[in-house]
Length: 191
Picture 1 (cartoon, one colour):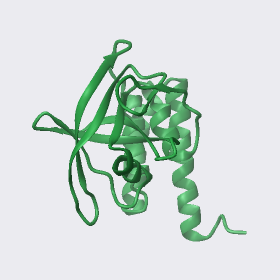
Picture 2 (cartoon, helix red, strand yellow):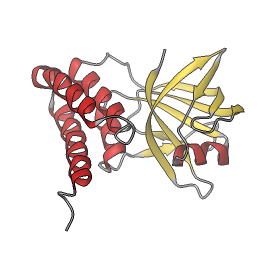
Picture 3 (cartoon, helix red, strand yellow):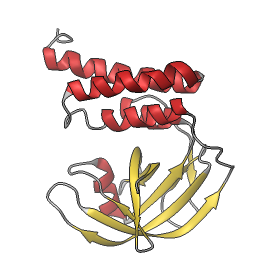
């Protein structure tokens, strides 16, 4: 099973990086498998630490992929890292094993500290749709645009029926990213 979260990591210089990330659990460890190349992978290998943030604000998922949002952070308790100020819960992680791969290495982390800050009441359909579209946007360079458009049209039903203001904003950021990508493919946004 894959759990959608927001992963925060630090560069060696201490610069925070925020990225939506699907993680798994294996044998009591957290498995993170970033694609090569990525800032997340560089940071995790350089510092050996990460923070999983669990939030119901889907703008963080969308904003991290589209350049929107300045998400407030605070220092972690046990590892060198940062926690989203809006996180409902977080886990502080320490790298214990790496299995290299040419495309997507597997990094195994142990949880050294975890905290719950507020109750999680679940996602509504619009929030789930935003997260699913965020996953598709993160793979724009890997998936056929027709597949993304088909999925977008289906997910839009949940947005139209159940979205609040935050979900509508996040959705629009992602749709704009897809439209800009398509325009770049066709040369329509070139000067």
